Image 1 (cartoon, one colour):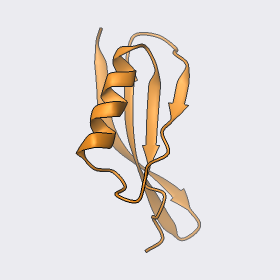
Image 2: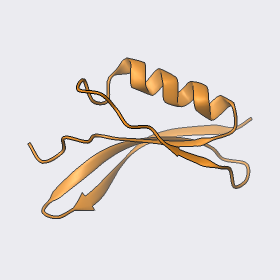
Image 3: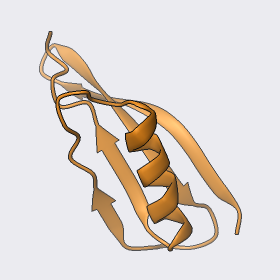
Image 4: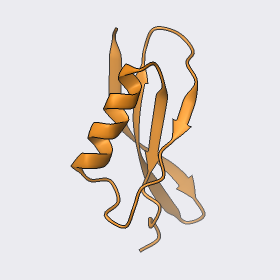
Length: 68
């Protein structure tokens, strides 16, 4: 399966919300918004997103405390 991983900046008010997106590139798939904990976008969150992506999901993990 061909897969992609990237960071996307989503404009929210005056700030940009950094979001890690892991997605299969072959066809449309169901999506999951992965709500992060207090440590934000760390290695564990990225590994879980990639793991879920391997099961056929598009995974978006936003940085929830982006206004700081």
